[in-house]
Image (tube, rainbow, N blue to C red):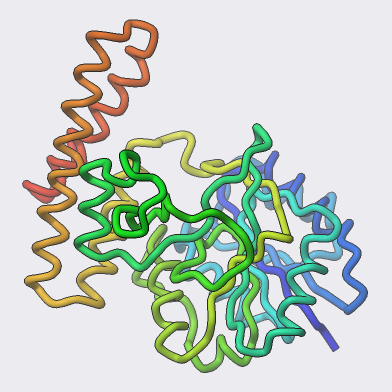
Amino acid sequence: MIELSIIVVTWNAMRYVQECLASLIAQTLEAPMEIIVVDNASTDGTQEMVRRVFPNIVLIENTTNLGFARANNMGIRCAAGKYIALINSDVTVPPECLNTLHAYMEQNPSAGIVGPAMLRPDGTVGRSYMRFPTVWNCLSNALCLNILFPGSRAFGGWMMADFTGGTCEVDVLNGWFLLVRREAFEQTGPLDERFFMYGEDIDWSYRFKNTGWKRIYCSEARALHYGGASSAAAPARFYIEMQKADFQYWKKHHNGVVVLGYWLTMLIHQLIRLGGYAIAYFLKPGIQGEALFKMRRSAASIAWMVAGRVDS
């Protein structure tokens, strides 16, 4: 009987995929597990590599890019495990990580989802949790109050700048690495496939909360996340996709007045960034390239928000 089903969605990130799958094969989990790869029509040889190097892994080959949520749901429908792990293709999983997460789930039956700490390539610990977004905590981020008052719960923002670490319940677990209890999944339902890429993790966490399941950040478990493997070829475009997903979440779970408040907050956010990066461009010649990119990114976000389009 399968204890753990691991789903890995891939799209044009072959080098990372191979490292990810090799780390999963090397796991020390004593209970039986299965690995399912869902490839969203990669053109970089990912499918051929998986068939050649990992012949015992289940491979689902899509002929078009169906998006992150839909591809994960396809993998989950094929999964037989008591627990289901959704792991990004640009994640490397140390040997004891899944054991630690599995043990936490076994010992804490109220936990519906658990996620590990995120190690960055430089060895620092990244953020893999958030609060549910509100107009106020988004405004705190927009006005940089979360930076000015990093220890303040009131100004910590939805990115939780005030969080000091340690295993605890959080509002949102980011979707780079999630271990889900099947019972909780069956009560909450699959990922919302209307979210093509980004936003589905916030929506899912919100729905798990509504069905009474805890979302647990487990600091004792750690995994390496390179980040942005699939989006590296077009970072500005994927940044806009993230904005679209955020608005989609707000429209799904809030009324029009609240959505308008969020829209104004995000407009303020981008205008402040645009002005700040413009100043940095002229005052700090050493970062002109980065500043110019971020100016263009903010300008594209404003164009989409105001005119409903993105300048190509």
